[in-house]
Image (tube, rainbow, N blue to C red; front, side):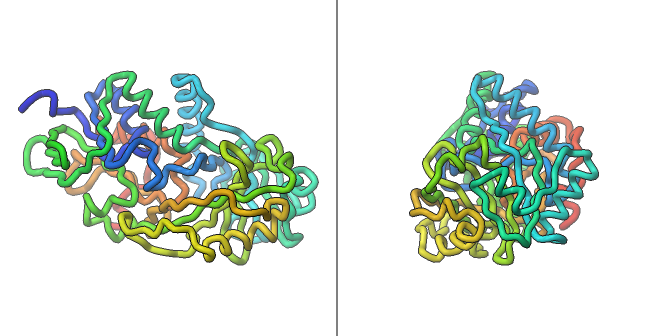
Length: 378
């Protein structure tokens, strides 16, 4: 076999997690190939839409906080490497009624990990951050280290940094088969075939197409992000408008200050609960999509109740418990997988990349990934 087509590791899917894995494999001296079905930083999956929230007061589970600290560190290291700011600090607000999952979960994370925070009334929030006008029934936990990371640019920055130290990337190439029958794993694409000692699979919503056993554990869901015009732009700037998680009777919403493109950006977790196939997703924005997001805007952000300036679809890939799946594949230790990020994964990209590279290299990781192991399901 030509040595040009044999690699130490192949990363299938060069999105948020895959681009970071490629960089960390290259840093370990691996001859690494990344294969991306679409173009880099494409808009077909889950890693687009200008930016993604990063936060330490992690309401989903306190166990995320230690790896989040590492993610912050690695984002800063990547910024130094590419000489560009990727992480922006605005503070974060976790908002809900007393006893709500959002408020109690974020408070528990702060308590267990001694995170700086303040508990604010709705009135306190409005006085400090005038873009907010919250119902009097809610309270907010403010954590000053929250903010956002750049989405598309985060993918390209990881990829550029990986290529700069020897990684190879093929765009517009689709993996058709992963053959595990030989001493090396054989990856067959629509262009060629390649062999590698290790395979890292980070294909998001397309996970089941390569590992059918994961179909019940990595379920794609249609999401919509929307940007609306604001009446007082000075109230929606990163300097005075923290990112937020907002739990209302209608569901849990998340949002951002104006940045990158005009408008106030908002989304809702499990937008309309639409399970989809990644190649069959409806990418048209409907009036029902806008209606879902207007609910929160009119209740809490009246200064952003202007016309829609931009809207896009993306996908969550949900695991049954909405915690990540990051592990060595039980049937074949040459394969490492990352999937099921359930709409809250992007902030973790650099540290998940580090974990995947460690698993591919030595089969273990320095990080505690007990919460992410496949053994909880199979």
